[in-house]
Image 1 (cartoon, protein in one colour):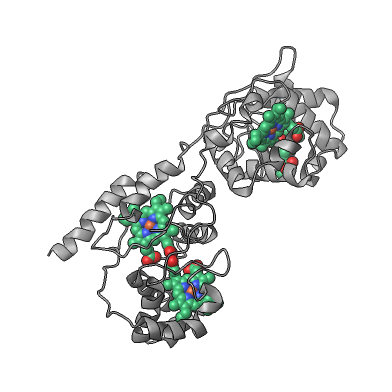
Image 2: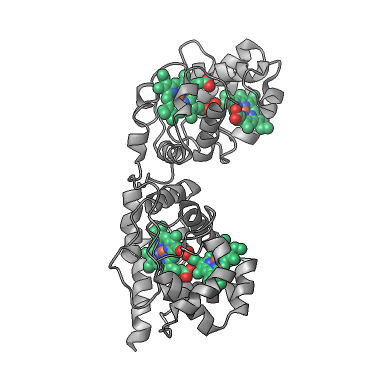
Length: 377
Ligand code: HEC
Ligand code: HEC
Ligand code: HEC
Ligand code: HEC
């Protein structure tokens, strides 16, 4: 009896904790099947020929997207191999290996890896929060991404994907701006993702059209922009920046820069080439006076996420009903990849799919950086 009730209660708690889950998970989480203890010495020689190329003989993944196995739970590794074998996780090489190896050989190999000391993460720096990462930006862009400086864009409520692309373009020099180039040069990829996640979840305030500008003359001109930027400049696609409520002077300057090619973008050049200065002024006034897109999600920090995930993944949170892997100190790119696989249904595991469904790519990056920087347990 209790065998069935326990997973049901856990799932009920999980679904309750996860407000945006589209539907309750249908299958129960896998039960921990007691495994025969393997022989680590026999496992070592098998690992040397079959696994070490990718997972190292020391259990450290030889590429950023190959998981560390050192110190991982044997029962979890065996379960994962069964999932590859059954096609519940996609990976051709592992599906093949899962079929080749007997249960006893697998028990030996996983006993070997489980007994190795866990790999220490290269940097144990605590993950940054969006607020800290944007401290240097606030003077111009505002603490919450609502700038009050004419000519400087607001970033609040902008698509995270667009913000990442813009910062990378300043960094690489593909987009030239003397103010932003030195700012972006200092940022690594993880910080860019944290910053983009932070601003995209702030609430934008309309900058408004300046006195004398003719927003109503701009409305019909916006007809040929709406296909990409959304009817009122509230873009639905991260490829296209939202324009609603953006600064008038910045909008006009950008449109002129696309027209001359000073800001290189073929789609934009085609859309605004030959536009009269008066029309540029009017269409910019139209967008500046629109209401910015309401943000759907609140900004979640690494600590907010950990509070949810550590219910199962914290040290000491042993759960008799499911085999929960160690994720502290795991390779960041691998955590990133695994979470996307659960979210996108490429790894079929109901507990983690439910956790993964509300995650954006930016959320996932924050989580991956957080856990990969923690000391392994
Ligand atoms: C060709 C490279 C390669 C070889 C050889 C290989 N692996 Fe892997 N392994 C990977 C990759 C890549 C992943 C992540 C796959 C995914 O996305 O699910 C992985 C994942 C795993 C996982 C899941 C870990 C987790 O944290 O979920 C286990 C367990 C595992 N491998 C065990 C083994 C064992 C045991 C062997 C030897 C018998 C082996 N692997 C051989 C590349 C390899
Ligand atoms: C000294 C003022 C200043 C500071 C400090 C500053 N910015 Fe900027 N930022 C600007 C200006 C001006 C622009 C417009 C540049 C252009 O026309 O390309 C801009 C543009 C941007 C854009 C492009 C927005 C869009 O809609 O395309 C992003 C993203 C951005 N900044 C992020 C940041 C971040 C992140 C920081 C902090 C690490 C930062 N900025 C610091 C002044 C500043
Ligand atoms: C075919 C799709 C497309 C159309 C149509 C289009 N745009 Fe764009 N627009 C883009 C893309 C893509 C970008 C981002 C380019 C980049 O990375 O610099 C952009 C960027 C912009 C920007 C810069 C925003 C910022 O935050 O830096 C402005 C302003 C803009 N567009 C205005 C317009 C106006 C006004 C029109 C209509 C006259 C228009 N666009 C029509 C695709 C389009
Ligand atoms: C109800 C318990 C539970 C909660 C809550 C939970 N997980 Fe998991 N997690 C699991 C289980 C069970 C697995 C193993 C699934 C499998 O076999 O694929 C897992 C697997 C993972 C993996 C794959 C690790 C690997 O080595 O392949 C990652 C990464 C992960 N979880 C991260 C998270 C994050 C981030 C959160 C919070 C957003 C979270 N988990 C919340 C139970 C949970």
